[in-house]
Image (cartoon, rainbow, N blue to C red; front, side, top):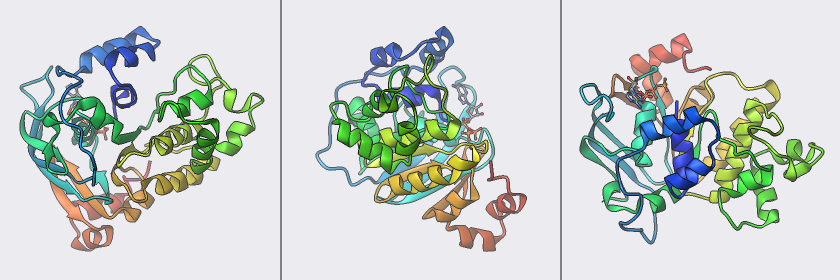
Length: 294
Ligand code: ATP
């Protein structure tokens, strides 16, 4: 599961801003607990981003549990525009890879690069602006739908916000609310279904227009009406971008350019869906048992 802190870290330019978006005290604790011990500014900003991501012999232990290494030498290259689906059992390390990509943490050994540049050389807030995150439990702030989408690109016009909502298959249901785009959502606002929240988060990512995407598919079934609409919106969002998807649905995996199976902090298989199925290894067994489905 992608961490709540990741959604916030990528949305907000700094932790202070993230804190402002928080209500409950326990979430602050969660944030502090996971706050990276690194400067959030300074470093290079690349002029053009092709979007090649490489994990090079990455080892990692969480700061609070240094004795427990969770990634044991990950090698993974994602080419510009490629959609890679990460699958594997709970606790395998999939979300941790995402956390390293947005530099919530740095590897204990090895490096993560973007277009060949070590992430540690890059300006963290610039880096986060290049990555769109749609998590399983998107963080919606206690404000209007329009403002929630506009977090993707502050200063976007109302027309652009509408366009993003339309691209995310969210405009119809939002317009169905009595207050339309001004409807308050989040803690004290209109309760949105899981699928509706995801579509608002997708609209935010569309508006942000990042080169890289980090998606965490919902494990639980979404409401029936939303499911297909979410899938379609995600497919549209991923087109032409480098995407790393923590996948739980067979349809997503089948549609990805490549499937990477993570188990126990290692890449144990990598290849196309069909090739991996016919190989008859770990992935084939996952598909057989249908554990990819939420
Ligand atoms: P899931 O599919 O359940 O989300 P995952 O493959 O994403 O699992 P991770 O969340 O990356 O797995 O977790 C990898 C390992 O790191 C697990 O053993 C987990 O318990 C541990 N872990 C995750 N977050 C932390 C943390 N903040 N501090 C210490 N250990 C952690």
